[in-house]
Structure formats: C-alpha cells, structure tokens
Image 1: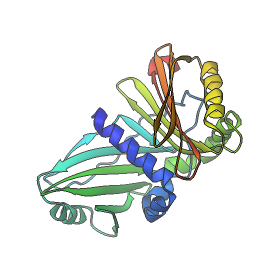
Image 2: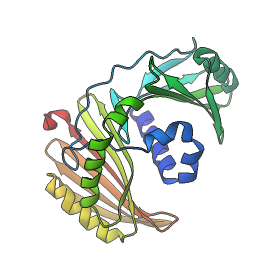
Image 3: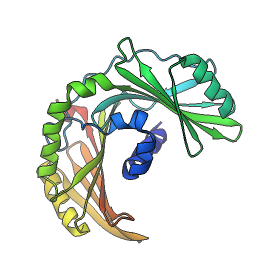
Image 4: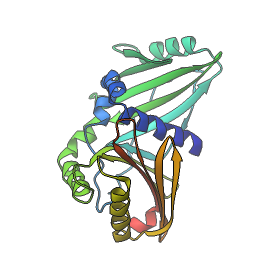
Length: 266
C-alpha cells in the first residue's frame, strides 16, 4: 500500500509540473488545482473530520484497496482506491461504463483511459477512474473528490496559502499540496517552484523548518543531469525531507515531504 501511495504522489507531481497535461484532464483535475489545505502553522495541517463517502458502484470483478484513511489534494478531500483485474482493459472500461451509466466524460491520456462523472445526491462529489492495460490484465485508480467541501473552505484556505508565500523566497508558487492521514500518521507532500538559486532555497527551508521544531540532520548534493540538494530533518515524533533541483525550464523545484504523529497536533 505504501508503494501504491508513492506512485500516486508521483503521478500528481508530474501532472502538476506539466501544465499542458493538466489542461487535457481539465474535467477532473481543474478542481484539484483550485485551493490549498488550511494550515495552523507552516507544517501542522488543520486535521479535517474523516469524510463519510457515498458508496461507489463497481463492476463485479473489481477488488479495490484504499490508499489512506483520508487524502487531501490541494485542499480537496479525496478517497483514492487502487485496483487490478485479470480482465483486459477494454473489458474493464466497458464494465465501468455500464456500472456508472451516463452522463459520463471519457478521455484518453497516453495509454490510459479516464472516465469521470458527477456523483452524490446533489452532485457534490466528482468520481473518476483511470484505467491502464498491463498486457492482458488491467490496473487502475479510482478517486472520489468532495467538491462542495473544497468550495466551502476556499476563503480560509487562501489566507493560509498566503502564509506560505510570506515565508518562502520572493515569487514562490505552491504547485501541489497533498496531505494524507493513515494509521495515526499525518503525511504531507508539497511542491514549490521559484526562480531562485538552490542555496537560497536551501537556507530558507532550514530557517523555516527550524522554526517548526525540525533539526537538520544531513545535507547531501548529487548530480544527475542537474544538481540536486537533499536535506534531511528530524523533530519530536516527526521527520522531513526536501529535495531542491532545477527543471528543464530552469525553475527551481522544491519537493518537501513531512511525516508527523497525529498526537503531536492535538
């Protein structure tokens, strides 16, 4: 399950950083880029109540596994399930179309088929499935997003978003913010971009994380097509790791991962 969660975070990161791909998925991902998760401080997320999700009608041969108790992508609560099937992708696609009915939005991204539709008694949720062929078998991801709740918290989230910007190098942008809650652990995956040098960003992060109770344990630099700085931090019942590098557009990209025991936040 931990491996599946890592794959999902990588997918979201890639979609966020390649804006053209995001536009092609606008029928679902546009919702995911609207808002950011409220924060009580820079790294202590305001814990949401666990959402009571409506049931999802699934084809008979689909067995799902949840990624986390609660997953929040850019401020929107999500239920994310992964599945595999011994049936070929074409059969799985038709099975979901039959199970979900119409209206149903269909799109194709590379080798993946994406199906999406409004869900819930008042259409307050958005339901999406990504289906990918693995030879004669199939794997996929089902996501259910609470659109209504995201809009209800929009103003408060924007205020908290500004707190981030005020503590980062000038003209920084937060391009992805993912929070998951599972087995008593709060995990956060954050992507920041700006035009500043790696050393400047590194110094900002060291000061910011020190203020939040993290102590720098190790710093390493490596070259893999581009220079990458990696910072490792530790605090009381919490850890953080940041990688800082340049992308193909010469932007500096910070990927920050933190984990903290929920007892720290209560």
